[in-house]
Image 1 (cartoon, helix red, strand yellow):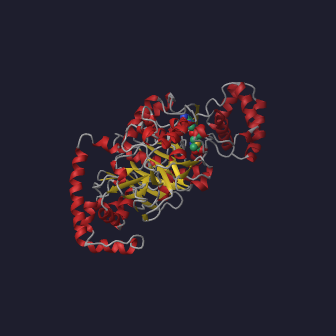
Image 2 (cartoon, rainbow, N blue to C red):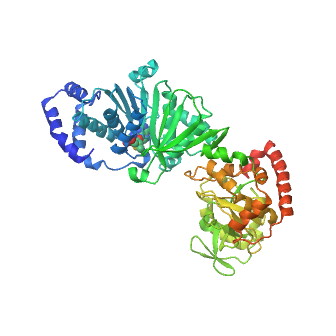
Image 3 (cartoon, protein in one colour):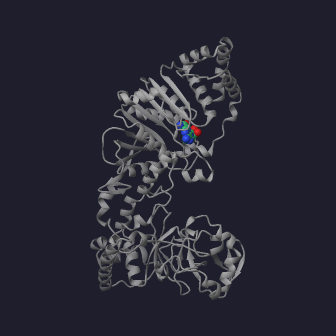
Length: 597
Ligand SMILES: C[S@@+](CC[C@H](N)C(=O)[O-])C[C@H]1O[C@@H](n2cnc3c(N)ncnc32)[C@H](O)[C@@H]1O
């Protein structure tokens, strides 16, 4: 609400307060005007309200802990119109995290049949802004709906008897609308905030995390799941603004939850324009009745044009179902195991830059002299994987172990310079936050194994939008190590590496990846995604001539190599054998453990 709007209702409010001196009468008058029950609970609240009212300008601050981005009224109007255009006329509105109440105002403007509005908000200051907003609106339009506002935490809130009875009778159309907080549980734990789902919910959502494969979830996700569970009702619809990653997790989880839901849509918004933030966001719209495909159609909120459909298709979760249908012929199991790069969580100490023949500079700006370079390896970060072939780097990394859990004590005697250097920084290394380092050898690293030391690698950054596969060649007679923002496969044999690298540059692979990868996620390329590229299926589509074509047009300028049909046939035989071996591995009982290595 603007300051001028505040001033224009100023005098009306003064009249109201000055002429009526009984609390009950003020509340009755306000109920008649606004539909808000028990506008004030005490005279003290009236005084607070007046004080707040005159200091309104102060309340511009956003609260991080509460994921607070109040939705502009133009956008809430737009979202309500979207619901109206779908032919749905709600009688009950539920806004679980209502803030200043812009969704409630837009709903009152847009829908003609609203009888009852139920709004909850945790931040106490918003109670007054909400009520003021409603009061202001009552001067523009008569409000016939009853409004129940609860200053409460939606995670622990108990529905009022009245709302419960509406849900139980199941006759009225219900719209659950809003914009739940934009913050993740891990961001909240950094802020030491208690604004988290209750233990019961957390447990439940841990189950969902296990399904979606992530322990870090947006609290909007748990609020939406709770709404779906509580208000699963034959006449209910949801329209909630949230990050597209939240919508994706909800659609992904639907397969495992016995909830009725149909016609799931996502209407994308321009968050820069609406909120001045960079985030991929959309309005999730769905019906809580019927069952349909567990997929979601994406449209633009502004021109209502359909972009694509993502979701479950034949047991696979994909980002573009139509494209996936065309490219699924190579979706299967990779004959090679994709691995994540080295994890050490101490780039300032473990990562070095070449400074002289025996000297390096670390991330703390110190010059470090290490004459024995046995434990020092050439190193690449994901951000360096920009070219199809990488054959040099000036970065180095200290590799303290050759397999997980290897005892590092021997470094003290075998490589004293390295030991002294690491010991000098042991305070930084022992402060590493991740629990994976607890109880492990000094200076431990992760993501290391026999595969790390193979000379030839094909690597991809997990974080790029477009897939780029780089052939990484040994440098200074050593295998190049990669950081944990990369995935790679490694080879003893250059021929096999080169044929694989060429195949990974085929349109077939690119198209498959574009149809299964969600480019707006933080880590679009995961081990799970890469393990789906089935080279054995692909070689059936790529003749030797096709292979030469891909090489000549896309890769030859970066790496000169004589392709040979017999070698290609041998390559095909090799990956066939690998497929059998990996299949056995996949089916072995301790495969999950091996994957973690
Ligand atoms: C993204 S803002 C949106 C506010 C409002 N729905 C709108 O669209 O303008 C999220 C709101 O959720 C509120 N909120 C955060 N955690 C909450 C909780 N646990 N219970 C109720 N409200 C909460 C915040 O205070 C904030 O007002």
